[in-house]
Structures are given as structure tokens and as C-alpha cells.
Image (cartoon, rainbow, N blue to C red; front, side):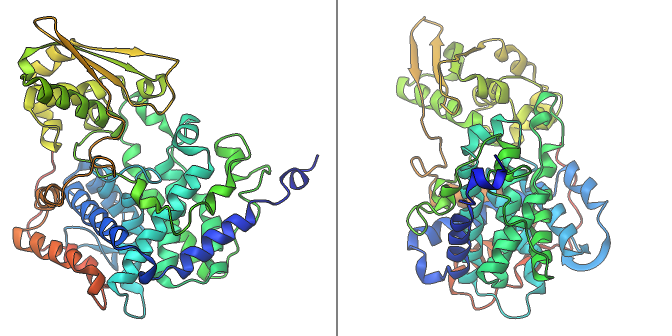
Length: 468
């Protein structure tokens, strides 16, 4: 049976509904809680990105950019073209695993660099409220595409890193809303962006730095798609149908669930499903960190009383986070075992606990021997691990944290969000600039024009050394 007959072209109305919703999205449509949430994610992503300028990966990618344009690069006086800026700054936003998760997956690190690259070229003022709408549109599209692809488990389980694949569409959506595209132009940008979707999980087998580029490439690709749509390019109208070469059949080998594009528009805000990250580890490790911390608090015991930790977890999580590769920062941040060892040896799981010195601490290797993984095929793919802590006196306690700290169910406090931002942003900017930036974002919805936001992120200070 021909592909078009099988599909009945059923996806297009749902995509049209999503495009129409995003293009019409106005500040008055956003509940106060969504506005506040979006601002928190914006501030958090800025902090992660500024800290990321201290990474080897950021500086190596920056060296490849064509300098001499007008678009600022983070924490320096260097400038380049918009798409190179989206790429380079996107690498900074994701490189230290401190950006948000639970969207496309890492929506903030994809959407914000694309917007920062697009802002300076806007011909008319962009109000802070409209910037918030553009960010919100990016989160709406990124998560909707992932949901339509069967969700995180199906899409990523097939080997694709959704930050790079679905995130490209999120970036295209955010830029399109920023520029005021109509529904047709918006849809062309989204469908064009599918041709720039990429990102494989192969990095997970050896701690490769390839993952660190995925968010930047998605930001760059989304901006390019929006540029092409404005230049008159048409996107493939059947890319979300069940056709050969379609998005769903390519990435998840089935017809997808395109009805997710229009599900809950204006009621179930996708940014409320995203999470901030208090720990500098892959999000897959966060629930276990919380579980161990909770057990120690509830039992009023110290880390040195722990004899062993056993984790019953899904094979999917085991494949993602079950290895201990500590020779690289990327490998350590994908290790659930290292995250727990760092928590119990150092008392924290911040970026500093992933330094070369921390990873080389002999106490880490010793404690890793007390952590045991038990993959359970009966557990659902996305289930959080069941953590059993056994103490030296043979008493034990078991806990599971369904939603980790930073989620809607277990939110970080405003003070904790600000403290994280101050700590990270100060790795690249002087204290007075960090405070001013936080003030700018705090009052964002009332600002008449925020095209100067990228200028607040540059610095003429001597560049700080690479974080090792």
C-alpha cells in the first residue's frame, strides 16, 4: 500500500495546531507560574552557559568559528556570525551537564543560544515578555516532538540523543516566535529543521566529547531552518506522516503519535515538565543521589557508616549510567556510581567534584567497589532506581525517588536557583556583572527591549583558565 494512503496525512492538522498556537502565543496567555518558571530556566541556563566557557570543548569549538561578525560570544569580546554563535554558545550551555533536562531533553541549552544569536539582528524592539513567549514556544515544540516520537524512552532507546534531534525543532520554533513568523512560515521552519536533526548515543560507550556538541548543533540548525523559511524555503509537508523518510519512521521505526503536537496546548505547559539540575551529573543519576541523601537524613547517619549501596534499575538506565569511566569529565558525568561516590566522599555533587583532582581521589575508587548494580528487565524503561543502603551494623534502608530535585514535584527553592546561578556565572563574569544580569532577568517581563541581553554576557576581563 502506498505510504500516503497508509498515513492518511493525519499529522498535518496537529502540526498546524501547534504552529498556530505558538505564533499566537501572547504574554497575557501565560499563567504567572509559567512566566516565573520560564525566567528561572532562563537564569539557570545562562549560569550553565557562562560556566561552560571555562571548558576545553567551548574553547576548541570557538577557535573554529569565523570571527569578525557582529554576534557576541559568551564571556569574551570575540564576535562571529549568528549561526556560529549559536553553535559555540550552545556547546557552552550543555558542556558541564548543569543545564536543564526533561524537555527535548536539554531544551534550555538549545533554545537560549539560538535566541541570543537571533536577538541582535531583530529590526524592532523585543520586549522581555515576548522573549519569554519565544522561550516558552521552544519548550512547547521540543517536548511535543519528543512525545510524538514515543517519548524519551522510545526515541533515545533507539539510539538518538533527543537534545540534538528534537532540540533542533525547538530552536527553530523559538527563533520563529521571536521574529513574529506567521503560522505557515513557522511550520516551514519546523519541518525544515527536521533535516538538521542529529545526535547519536554512541558517545556513552567511551566518554566521548561528541555529546557536548549536540546542543550547539541543534541551536545552529534551528536558527538555520528559521533563516531558510524566511528566505522562502518550504519544509517537507509530509515529514511527520508515516512515510519513507519521515521523522517518526526514521527515528523510532513506527508511525509516531502526531496527535501529541496538539495535546494540552495552553493547559499542559511543557516547561513545567522540564527540570533544573542541582547536581553536575547526567539527570539519570539524580534520583539515586536524592534517595541516598534522604536515607542518610532519615536515619541520622553519616556517609562513613555505609557498607554498601545496591541499586535495582532498568537495563536502559544501566546502559546509560551504569559504567564508571573516570578518565574524562564526560565519562564521569554519565556515571551513576561516580555521582554517589562523590556525594559520600565530598558531601556534594557540584562541578568541583568532577575536577581531575576529585576524580583521581583514591577514596572514589575504593567506594565504587561498594556500589552494586542489579539490572531488572521487569522494570519499566524510564523507572527511577530502587536504592538500598546497607550500613556497617547490617541495618539497611530502601528508597526510590520518583521525581528528582529540580522537578515540579520536588522543586529547587528560589534561593537555591539563585545560588547556583551566582556560583556558575561568576566563573566567567565579575560579581557586579553577575548581580546585574540576575536583576535584568528578574524584571524581564517588564522590559521594553531586551535586544541588548547578549551584550550583558560579554567580558573584557582576562579569560579565566580552563576548568580541569
